[in-house]
Image (cartoon, rainbow, N blue to C red; front, side, top):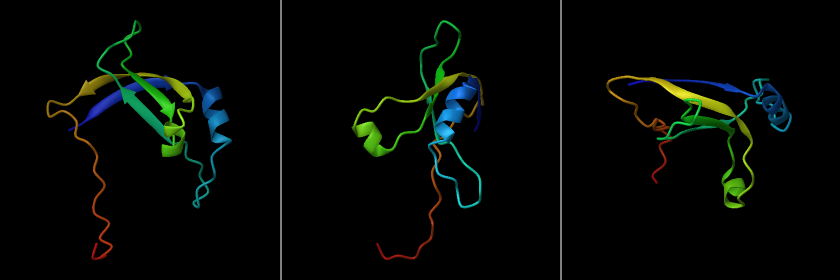
Length: 95
């Protein structure tokens, strides 16, 4: 099960967002993104948008999203796509 999404983002908006994000302990800075895939296609053939991920608090406060760019689904396997599920951490806690 796989899909390919192709798109482009604004380098200027990405660099601006990266300045507000803390560096990871491994020395890299990761920009958390959210990709929205829509049923409808816009006038340019895009059916997805790429935005800076928001925290729960930012979403609840209805803060303006930082929009990076557009994308389109260019391939979906015959099996479709499955929702990603995090494997059990195996922490051995009784609850």
